[in-house]
Image (cartoon, rainbow, N blue to C red):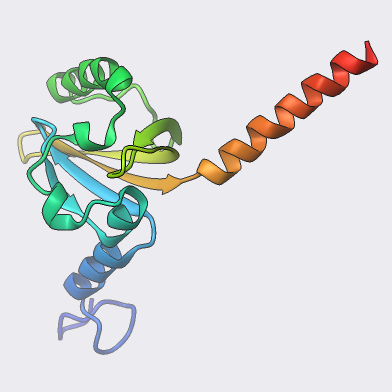
Amino acid sequence: MNHDGEAAFGAGLDTERFCRTLAQDAPDAMVYADAEGRIRFWNRGASRVFGFDEAEALGHSLDIIIPARLRARHWAGYAQTMRTGRTRYGEGDVLAVPALRKDGSEISVEFTVLPFHDEHGAMVGIAAILRDVTKRFEETKAMRRELAALRESAA
């Protein structure tokens, strides 16, 4: 950063503005939930992927995007991560799970997580960057079915 507070990205674009724009306008969903699992950040990408606008999501439980059958497992892992400060997923590991949209439909998402700690190292929340991969997931399932049918007919 130079003496005027501008980042290395060029004149007229300071670090704070850059980060705010990056987080708010990214095409991928970016969601941050506090230690209780309440949504505290929801970007435009999250609105596009999940169908909830920011005002509908902020302050609500992550349950709005977690299918009911997966909630118990999700919350057990979330509580353990908040308690221990460790996640069972490595840095940069891509996770794939079903998720819910506002209209009740299920989609397939891939995402990475970023734990947030306070100045004493205690967990305060988790951010996730998510991408809708439903189309690719469905295409892969269809190819697997076709391959299984071909193998069966060749046997």
